[in-house]
Amino acid sequence: MDLEQLASLLKRDLSMIALLKKQSGTSLIELVFSIIIISISLTGILSVMTQTISHSADPIVQFKAITIAESYLEKTLSKTYSNITLGNFSYTVDGYIISLSVLADTVAGQVVKKAIVNVSGLGVSLDLVGYAANEAGSNVIYKAEKYE
Image (cartoon, rainbow, N blue to C red; front, side):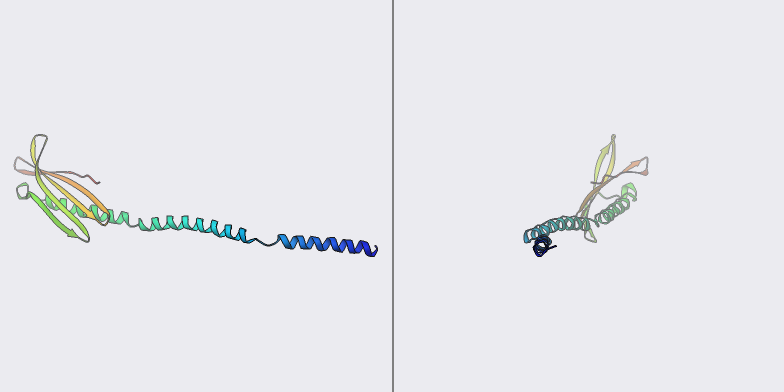
């Protein structure tokens, strides 16, 4: 091997090394695009997590509202028919506003007392309806529950 061949081989090897060095790094544009893609992905994930966390207490709040409504309806309808007072009543319990309306109504031709309990607050609003009828001196209670 003569000196010229050795020089050409060395020159070729140096140009290959230079080419490899030139292609081994990332450009500024690639870095910017990577940051944008990661930012968009994280924004989507965090928004889903935020919504999930904010709604995680909803079933507990709803259950408590239903329990309060059932309690007030049961308390009202457990009285004898003649002791169930007609009218509108309002109460506040643990941040919930309870509206109780007792009115005279007719169901299947019979006069009954209809109790409507509305519980609202903390992002929940529901109605619970019950009926009390007086049949031959006895207090018969019909309870129809409607949750909204």
